[in-house]
Structure formats: C-alpha cells, structure tokens
Amino acid sequence: MTPGCGSIRNRLSIIYDDFGIWKMITEDLIREKLGTVSYPGFSRDIVSFGLVKEVLVDGSDVTVKLSLATRDPAIPRTIHENVENALSAVEGLGKVSIDFDIQDPPDPVTGGDPAAGQSSIPGVKKIIAVASGKGGVGKSTVSTNLAIALAKTGASVGLCDCDLYGPSIALMLGAQNEQPMATDQNEIVPIEAHGIKSISMGYLLSDDSPVIVRGPLATRYTQQFLRQCLWGELDYLILDLPPGTGDIQLTIVQTVAVDAAVIVTTPQEVALIDARKAVGMFQKVNVPIAGIVENMAWFECAHGEKYPIFGEGGGAKEAARLGVPLLGQIPLDPPTREGGDSGVPVATKDSAENKVSAAFADLAGSLSGSLAK
Ligand SMILES: Nc1ncnc2c1ncn2[C@@H]1O[C@H](COP(=O)(O)OP(=O)(O)OP(=O)(O)O)[C@@H](O)[C@H]1O
Ligand SMILES: [Mg+2]
Image (cartoon, rainbow, N blue to C red; front, side, top):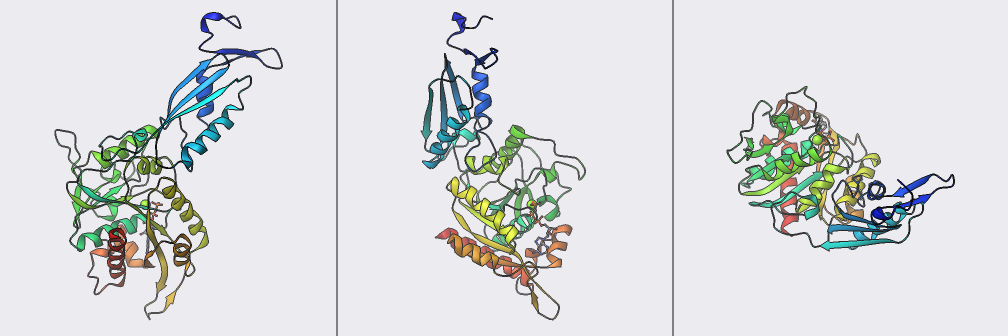
C-alpha cells in the first residue's frame, strides 16, 4: 500500500513517525484508544459497554459518535474529557469531534441492553440492591435475612443472587440441591424457600464447578436472572451484589431501575473506605441510598456484655456523613454464621426470642419506612 493512496483516503490517514515508518489512523486504532476510557466511576470501558456507536475517520480528522442513556450531565462531560485525553496520544491526529446522543433512561421497558438505560421489572414494586465495596462484610447474610424478615411482615419478596462467581444464596437458604425449572418460553421458575423466591448460580452449578462466564456472558446471565425469571408480583426484589464496583454492578445499576441501595459495612475504617466507593457508584447513576447497615457491630457474650470487635460507631458516623439513615446494626453472632451455613437463616427464628432475628425485623421495618418516604 502506498502512503497517501487516494481510494482509501476517507477511511484512513497515513503519517510518518520520527523514523519515517508510516502509521495509519484507522477506525480500529481509534476504537483501541477509546477502549482505554472507562465509564465514569467504573472499571468497564465505553467500547465494551456499547456506547461507541460510530467512529468516522476522514483523513487525519476523527468523529466519534457516542450514545448514552443518563440524566446526569456530569457523565457526558467526563467522558468527553477522557476521550479527548485518550485520543491526544494518537500522533498526527487532526480535528477530533465527539458527538453525544443523550437520551433519558426509558421507563418502563423490558430490554436488557445496557445502552438502553435503566428499566423496571414488570410486576416488581421495589428493587433494592444490597452492596458493599468490600468482600466478606455480610452482604449475602444481610440480603437473605432481610428478605426473610420482609416476607415475615406479609410482603412478597424475591432474592436474586447477582454474585455469579461466589454465589451464596442457594446455600444460605438451604436449597442448594434444588434445580430451577424452565418453562416452554424459556422462563426460569425461581426456587421458593423460607417464604421467599430466589435465583442463584448456586442452583445451576455443583459445589466444585468453576464459573467460567466472563464479560458479556456474565452480563447476559445477570440479565436472564433478573428478567427471565418468573418473579410474579413482588413487593420487593432484593439484589445481592458481588463485592466491588466492577462490570456486573455497573450493568445492573445501568440497566435495572434500582429503587434504592442498602450499603452493608462493618464498623472499621478499611470497610468504610470501600463502602464509600459503593455509595459513590450508586450516586453516579442516580440510585438513592436507602441507608447503611452496620454488620458485626459488636459481639455479645453469654453474660450480656458487648465487645466492639471491629470498632464502634463506624456505621453511624458514615451514615451521618452521607446524610442517610443507619438502617440497622447486626451483632457478630456465631449462630448467625451457623444459620447461613446450615441453610436456616437466623431471621426465620422468632424475633421475640432471638435478638439477631429481632435486629433483622427492625432492619426490615426501617427499610420499608425509608422507602415509603
Ligand atoms: N453478623 C454476623 N455474625 C456472624 N457471622 C456473620 C455475620 N454476618 C456474616 N457472617 C459470616 O461471615 C461470612 C461472610 O458473610 P457473607 O457471605 O454474607 O459476606 P459477603 O459480603 O456476602 O461476602 P462476599 O463479598 O464474598 O459476597 C459468612 O460466613 C457469614 O456467615
Ligand atoms: Mg456475598
């Protein structure tokens, strides 16, 4: 190919670097650079997320067309800046135009396309995401017991285990040997246990089978769990999110109209730092924070003395800082761990006789109160 070849002028531009070796500005090169631009606040890039609709190369000039579904003006502004920065590394690049097609997130629709914006799930009144930045602070324990405590108030409740790589819900509900059925229309029938409906990768895999879904496939599984499940009429659908603020969380909060997020943290600073990241993630996509749950808040010995193993007051301080309620405090309680392992969650116990079950009942009450506001 001769540098400057006329017939391909509109598709690419050829320039020389310091050593006289020619390089081309191609659509692929531009897309490669755009692939280094993350969606604000998340690890996933704008190309893999499907936001880049068109890249036009005209000589050394480039036009990038992006499509976004957001109501937050800061998002396109940040993306614009980061795209400009990423492309400034391309030598010989001429004029760069960045065009945005910004739409309001449609509501309600049933599609699962992340670029289509957030949408509700038909029949589900409130979708609650339970999240934390940090792993192992008790999201799944809180999700499971909160779901059961809400169901005990007479609400119809579903629990979706969005943690594909470390699913815990099937085990915590003692239903790991159940196999969800599919209807002729390929809808998944959720498993019913302890008065709630649930779906989890744990129902589909044996204990030792690794989850090998990655990237877009993981997104598809999550979408299927959320949208192809026969949830029926639900007052609450609780989403147990995996730890962190990565692709799965991004996809969920971008595609599902989450009504509120519950942030689980333990009292110590290292957990609070990560909790703040999770709060930031929800704020970026305009999901309100219902409040904070402080888990493992203290250990109460047989004589009734309380020991703040992981420190004291961290949850309350963080809630005050964010201006959101501290929805509940759950003690560090060995029978609660045993209940999770044996598939009989502590919230199934009579709350008049069990303090932790009572704490989850209180949490259910404060959450429904907070949502009603
Ligand atoms: N209040 C509690 N008292 C005693 N044990 C608890 C409590 N909360 C959680 N645990 C135990 O701590 C472990 C981690 O809890 P869990 O799996 O709920 O955390 P997670 O945040 O969902 O973890 P991951 O980030 O891996 O999803 C489990 O063994 C669970 O039984
Ligand atoms: Mg978990």
